[in-house]
Image (cartoon, rainbow, N blue to C red; front, top):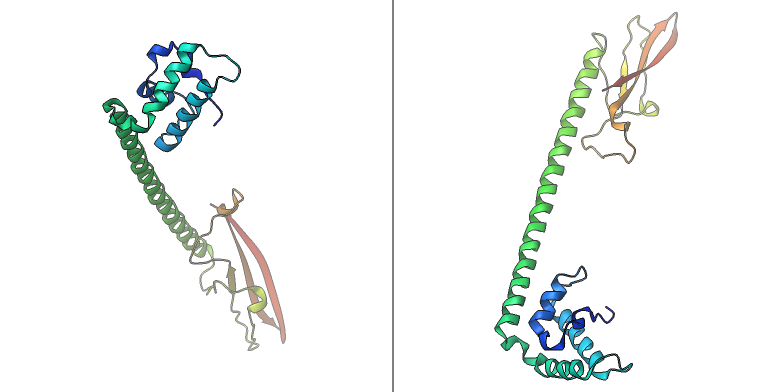
Amino acid sequence: MTTNLAYFNAPPESWTIHGYYKFRKLQSDFSGVFRKENSWLNDNLKTIINNLESKFSHQKVKRAQELLHILKNQMSDANVAVFWKEVDHERELNIVRNEGRLQSVKVTTDGVLNAIRTTNEIHQHNLLSLLPAGYSPKIGLNSDEQNTKSDFSSEYTPSTLLDSSSEYTPSDESGEDDVILVKIEQISTKKNQIVVHQRNLRILS
């Protein structure tokens, strides 16, 4: 922090250590940390005392010297001691509030994830209900992992490819979670030949 002499624009007879801290608390850059604020006050008083550019009157320099002299024992001033006790208490309360907000965010996030998982399960159930009767879908297999065996019978055994997992991972792109793409393969035999019918089923939630 650079030198901030705004408080010392007031008449020097009104200067007090407690008054300086109260003034600082109203400023946007107040740190709320005694060590920092005390160090800045010390620097400001020395700037006035040194008076390198002769900007300060004799009365201001004298009063700055008096405050610097008592600065080491400032906590013997009841007003200063109470001020910093209140500042520390406010900081502790803010810490507790922030921890409570973080816990609330965690609970909310967990609830959202559970709702998403439940929605996914409902989508899968609704999807399967749309398939023709007699289908036995296999979930979680890639097309190159499916081995088709034919007994050259007139019946076919359908397989369904549904990309699914037990855990939901949110996508960085919006809208991707509302689409379920299903690839359905039908295998039948016709005159000693294997015929594979493929179709894609796209369902929007």
